Image (cartoon, rainbow, N blue to C red; front, side, top):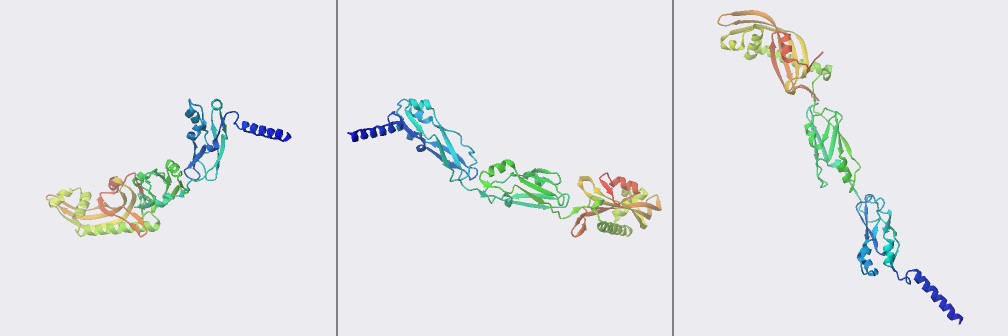
Length: 377
């Protein structure tokens, strides 16, 4: 008899446990651990998680004939903390929300609404050095050097307009307009990846270098001020000018350059060059340089770089036109203009030179020297 009582008590206890689990209450159990999963995507460090709730698998448990799909679809997941910045090995919590009253009415017992998952399967980012695909070149004479940035496509990426730049000389812009700027020798051009591009690239790549400096190396520098000339270079330029003016004096004196001779005589006599060509007989009996009056350096019209040397001279001449004889000695000025003079590793070079003359220093100065010029000491 005692054995039967004990057996009955045990059965009652088991039945109570089953009822506690929902069996005797008539409720069906939805253990969310069986219906919730997480998919991971993206790159390690910037990974994302998306929660998947298998509502279709729940439908056989929902006996409410009126709206089983609505009940199943009412399960939603809360936003995951740090989503979009996940790394492999991180643990994330997923909390599933639902309407408890709706579940009660549908006689459903929802278990494990809070779950944990370990992040895995995110791709590893590869190091990307964008500047390994940038080629810098420059050429020209300071301060008018031109520079160019070329972008190769080894990465398969379109790199046009990905960069901005600024120089130590105060110039700046995008990659597209660097070729429109002019730079001085030694000027530093800092190239930087644009912020928006950097943000996008870092979603899939590791970017360690975001800025790089390039230094302009000129093939020479123009002589634009007195400070550009050391004593050695000044001596060299003076010698060039002296050789040029002596050469031209010899050509004039020996009638090798009729145009230069007529222009000189026109300045000192007042007789027109045209009249001389028409029939004037002339002779320069003596042409002597007395001294170097002054020298000037600067930029003339159309950005032309010049050095002017103005020499005082005396000319003794004889001219006879149809009615008048000119036999006189007068002071005059001889002018040497050196164009495009620059200093290179080989020394002082120039692109061209010209010779002129004037009646006196003031007329020469007013004809050639402007406020853009500086007198050489």
